[in-house]
Image (cartoon, rainbow, N blue to C red; front, top):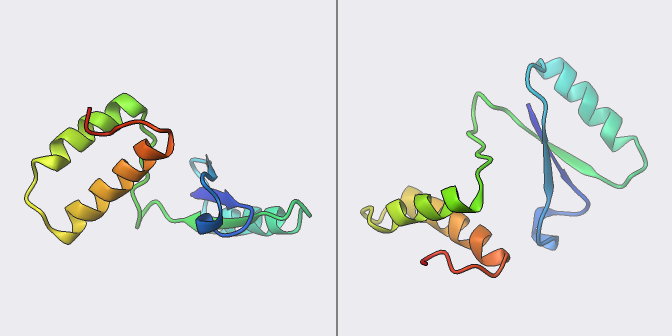
Length: 99
């Protein structure tokens, strides 16, 4: 399970941190979620099920290479969404994703 920690909502923050803990069962992930919520740190964790979602932990060079491939792909809602997410992530650090 990947637990994404947000202090408020993801829209309120420029960045958020993710913690990936391989090998957890659903029950263990739920228990950890409760512990984090009850910690008093003001965090609102979000469980991301790896059976449903692919999470990528890639560096800038890889993100730029991915963008280069996505730019030449036929437009469609899925490709456009991935392209926008990668572009936004690169732009958030002040980098031009097209270079």
